[in-house]
Amino acid sequence: MTDAEHDANLRTVILTGASRGIGHATVRRFSAEGWRIITCSRDAIPEACKADPNWTRHIPTDLGDRDSVAAFIEEANEALDGNPLNALVNNAAVSPKTAFKERLGVLNGDIDLWRQVFELNFFTPLTLSRGLAGALGKGARTAGGAIVNITSIAGHAIHPFAGSAYSTSKAGLSALTREMAVEFAQLGVRVNAVAPGEIATEMIGPEYEPLITRIPMQRMGTPAEVAGAVFQLCNPDFSYVTGTEIFVTGGQHMY
Figure 1 (tube, rainbow, N blue to C red):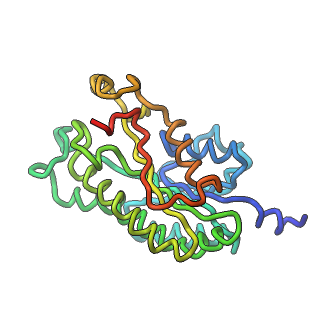
Figure 2 (figure 1 turned 45 degrees about the horizontal axis):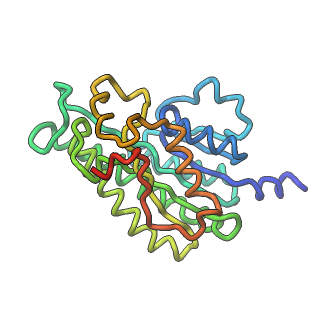
């Protein structure tokens, strides 16, 4: 097999917000399964990951800036070099607080901050999906093409810590997932979402502990458990699943 044939046979995933938490765990899962990985985030690659032979390229990107997103799409398509893209995972998001570290609600905070939240949490996944649609369509004709949007339990019910801007942007992303599933089906590309609940990442503080009483499984989830759901939605076993949203919440979303 030539190098070109080998490259063409590799499955490739592009993942945003890869430097920590759920994004980092998802990269590790895809790498363990032998996928080639292209990532982006505002941060550099963690040192421990630079030795990973499947981590093909990391592109530092400000996903809240339209010009930076456009540059990322161009560089990512160049990195693919005409080869198919088998999965796009829209993971990067922001949930800011007010200047007084309060929950950003409807009646407080700067309205421009709301626009920044929607730019990253809603418009960037839309822009990336459109910009990479051609490569995803190629993936669909080979080993399969899929998009997974990371939404949130906060997009479906009032959350004590997630602000209104974050929650409504994630609710919008849930709706966008359904709309995309219909349109991208014409390309053979499946579009689904994963909605995490309380996941034990660097972002979680002691104030989240009381929420465990509202989780039937009586514990927080792990980033690896979210990564497992994302991976399954991208593999051929789920080839007839599109337009759905999987809740990784330990049952919390039922309340």
